Length: 515
Ligand SMILES: NC(=O)c1ccc[n+]([C@@H]2O[C@H](COP(=O)([O-])OP(=O)(O)OC[C@H]3O[C@@H](n4cnc5c(N)ncnc54)[C@H](O)[C@@H]3O)[C@@H](O)[C@H]2O)c1
Ligand SMILES: O=CCCC(=O)O
Image 1: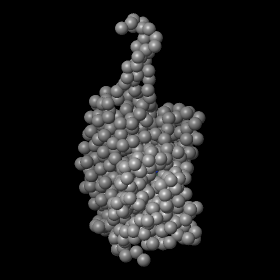
Image 2 (image 1 turned 90 degrees about the horizontal axis):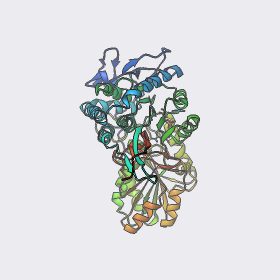
Image 3 (image 1 turned 135 degrees about the vertical axis):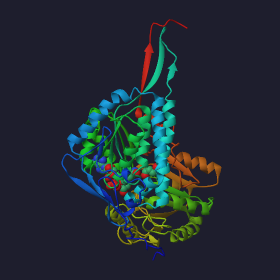
Image 4 (image 1 turned 180 degrees about the horizontal axis):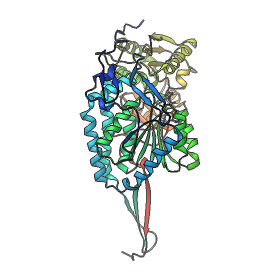
């Protein structure tokens, strides 16, 4: 039984406030600036009504109550085409703006985000469920992409390349790829959007963003700030729709969209890649992982436990870089699992808006079913429940640690995306490298060791795009974020992140004589 306080469930502030047209109840009633709450698509710098008159509701995953107004359904092929045309028209002029002016607008957006920190974090907690402190963390992470790419706008350097032909000079320039489609998931309602739009806008691209139906309000609030930051009409467009399939098909098939950037599951990533084949669109796919988290016998076990808690249970396990398999060397297995269980016991699970809550709910019932299936499957195969293992109520699941999870368990084959730490025993370095790489995906991998030789061997041997060595936290705007194998391709953030939104053009100038 989990000694955790779940007292905060079903507690909603009773106050409600009015914006110009809607009443905001629940967590959103505490917003200082309620005009950040929008419920329509954002096209050409205007809030646009649904053509069909249909709408959908957004629910607080902690309480199950509707939050915000009904959101207008704007995902018909005609509405998506309209957004694409607007982005195409805006690209004709936005591509020729100076990098300095793009830097200035991004810097203004960054400041506006900081000015609205409390409200933007409240919106994240209300629609995603993560605790307020984590929501503030996501918000700052989100803003840091805007800050980083504001500076990168001024660093789109070219090259001069020696010529093999007399009288010729070769120059390389970088240009914006064109209007881009951006499809983002619910687990980071804000940061997954800025990680894509900030480099796109810095490079000179215009965008059509499909915000997730589970968490549309963060993206819509960002669109309002984009407008206030002075970006010209049509540069950023946002579609609200529950019909991801139709919106995805239209965006991928369009000849006017030159690139698609997606974060989400590997399954959907493959669908988008197929759909984009007819136009050979450039793609950035940041997909699922199955991160190994290895603890060697020479590790600082206490630090490894801290790292595992931060890595595995961040956002209740709903992060693409969360540890999915905890692989622990036999001689430190008991010490590590006992300390891990003790740390998990101190979690306070509940409504993320309540003081002291450390871990929130899962996003929806489908997510709970997956965790439940992974727990039951592992236990049937012989794993031991060390703590947790059951649903609590609503969308809440007990933070769970399973010991001695056997080979073949479903939770070792695919990411759980929930609060389940599956701990596996290993004996040698060679064995654990083979175990760690025995998966079709390769996003992040982590390990704890104090042997410098081993550190280099293991870091180089892991088949992943990102390695955390003696840390469970790697996410920063300054690093190239992305995976290998079926975790996708492309890199987001860092000095490499602009390249995904640029094309390279060489200009060979002849008749220039010899130097
Ligand atoms: N890499 C990540 O950050 C991430 C994020 C969310 C989910 N996931 C993985 O996916 C699993 C299932 O979660 P999910 O169902 O929300 O993920 P998903 O990939 O089905 O959905 C993620 C987002 O993709 C969009 N989408 C879904 N189907 C689409 C389609 N056919 N065309 C275009 N866009 C589409 C939606 O906006 C949705 O919010 C999770 O258990 C987890 O393994 C990974
Ligand atoms: O879940 C996807 C992204 C998480 C992160 O950037 O740390």
